[in-house]
Image 1 (cartoon, rainbow, N blue to C red):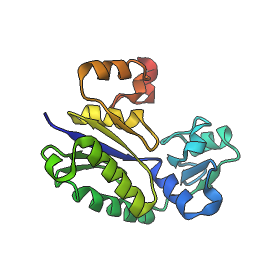
Image 2 (image 1 turned 30 degrees about the horizontal axis):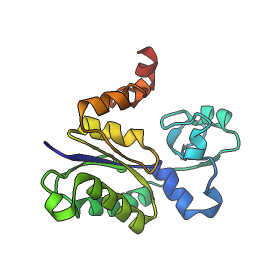
Image 3 (image 1 turned 180 degrees about the horizontal axis):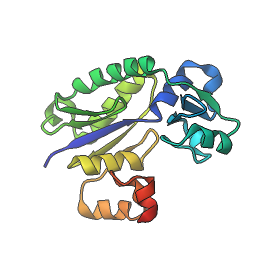
Image 4 (image 1 turned 135 degrees about the vertical axis):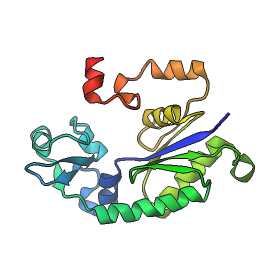
Length: 192
């Protein structure tokens, strides 16, 4: 059976800005722009408590969270951090599939003799990311990409979730909103 780890950086752009700027820590931080016509690229977990999420128009975000701190995207900075994280992935497996700059699938099938079981490998990857970047990530482990991605969503932020057998999957999935399913966005989720 294949062993896939999905790593998803937690509120990646916002987390980088909170790490780098003391006055942003523990505050509702919204990264996006331009303010009058742009959308949210990343919202800190403090901002998400107000119902803010990626893709939301910034004008709406400003109404929902007037005390939020709104800053523009600094893609150069985020891509630099992304490259550091990518290097960590390749320390564990050459089989890495990137999805944007803040998440990836790692096929660790056959890596157990080098790094331990899949849970140990995921812990090592998360630990190394934190040690080298001071950023948290969520990891999901499963026999395929679909379940690995679902697992990483369940444990956010800074989580580690394993979905292996059918019974376990059904027990955890039946408690989740349908929007947690990969490919089901907010609009489709509302229709379903």
